[in-house]
Figure 1 (spheres, rainbow, N blue to C red):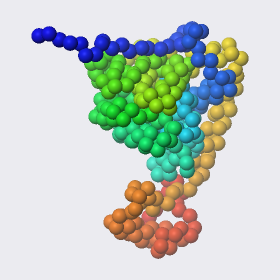
Figure 2: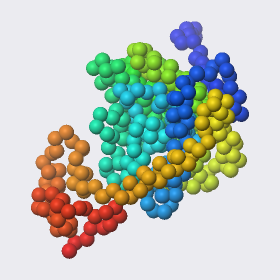
Figure 3: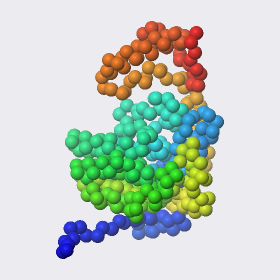
Figure 4: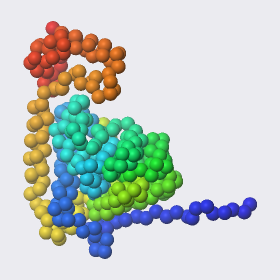
Length: 379
């Protein structure tokens, strides 16, 4: 049967500028301003040091389960640094470094992982969505934000983060399809860390890359060395500029690796080899970046100690904060609270009046709520 080719064979580009041996392709160096480069290094190191401290806090029972980011700092900071405050950032559940860059206080993030509602609340006017635990559900929301920005002529770009496992979910494909149809200003940043919990990338898709999935939805996809801060920055800046200029979405696949556990409830030794981890440790994004910074005369010594002190102070603020008002669980769910929630809230107020000294029948707290970790018991 005669056939007519309707689409030429596609190709996907891959970019690396500073390789795992620290060798720089001078012709591709994005020449990031020194002050910005210094900030980016500091943010990457803060993400790493906070990650290590949070693991200890979790093991001590001071916070709950969370998803460490070790090994993925360049993919996050290299991309999020291209945004402006007027842009939107939509995280999944492993974007600690990106959230720090966007101004989330450390103590607020600790509160989130300790199970407190206010830990997920962005500051007034902050154009970020909170951490999203269900896989890929944030992606249609990100496209909706981009559509709203386009409709309002807002000149804002939306950056949405997700992992390789999210591309196996229908939400990813629906979001990508609508992003292409509506030609909205969204940048999809996939951190392909090779494992969807215990499922390796090769068992998630028969496609050679994740980036090529963008082509089916009518917009560009590119693969980048996700442990190369310079390459991630260069690729993402181009995608953000395209989106802001009205040229539509881009899918960026950052090829990286989760050096630690999926979450602190996980044991990766059950499903991956030590040799694999050691091979990726040699590609550590921080290790390869330091010599590049030193050649440019930027400071790397003493930064770690400063960050450790900053983290310690934030942990103290977190643990000194009073517990939140339990009535907050009824807020921010509906624009107008429905009658059944009003009834449940009233019942909660009555129960709190019975168990909490100083709380009036109207729910007003005239003293203080129990401190973090203290149980309320009936008198």
